Length: 337
Image (tube, rainbow, N blue to C red):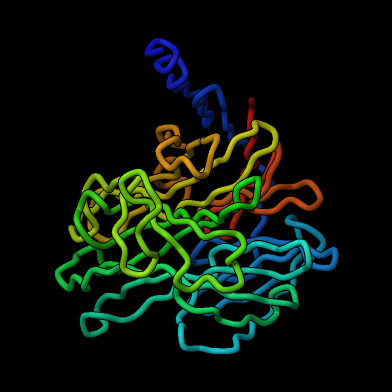
């Protein structure tokens, strides 16, 4: 068993190719394309009345529509029923079978005299494809006090920078997010879940993964990091994976997670983009060891895969897709089983 495990974990680099657990993700240059607006987070994608739609955010969201991910796309503002939880970055979405669009946002509250902020995660619902949203409230938040001594330059704690996917049976939505708060071993990438049946009334119904179970409440509960920070976020030289972006890849029958990594200098530098694979969203420790896909200097923050076949999105892709980083794509990403 050890020999097989060791063999499956062999990593082979060939240009920008990565071999993990028998899977290989390869990047190849492609004609550059960009989403129309500025990008400061994951940018969820869905289809509405036959049109491709992408939501981008820089403190407030915009939505763009067009014939497909390669464009052209036309942007317009998103209307909210409440601006209580702004600034807001919409980072994940899910189109239900009846056309209801569920979305989830990263909200930043100023702390420490405005020098830092503390993110939390909330939920939205739309019945018009994302043109307007109703705020359902905050569903994931840290129970720890703000840390005004934090020196990462941005956050003094909180939960944010995340991705959301349902399992295949639609039993649960899984939130893969970044924890910036609490005991240092708990900081890094963490997981919570929401019963699919509770998607329209999620407040108080999200539970965090902690010590092998899902017993801790989404608001204020404890958690276990599945990818713990190497150097905690309170330090100026923080070293951690963050901002996971997930999709199901039907070419390799695996979930794929792309990750940012900040390391190891002040100012939250982009050290590289990493990739990991898993069979099961509900097994948080089942992900392969992240391996580097792009080096520092080749890309910045916020990687995501967007499928190219009809109906695919940032949540579902096939063997050939586009890799976007910060709303710009200069690569195709090819998945080999």
